[in-house]
Length: 106
Image (cartoon, rainbow, N blue to C red):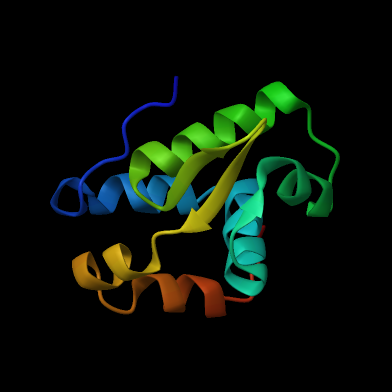
């Protein structure tokens, strides 16, 4: 069973920043930004680094529980998508600023 996604008004800035502060999770968010909704398996395969399924599951949970992504079941897989509208309402410009960052220092 998936954890419950936070409601829009429950999304906290510190949780979002913590989630986006990890280079793997930031790469996942960039993939979802560029390619739209994707299955967990295809996002994992698109990463520059090979990561175990258990570690990916942890990253999905952090992103989902912080309110950065939606994760929904679809058959035998889960689909991931950005909560772009919710983040834009809660923290205008934040997601765009993070996505535009060049990743220097990572």
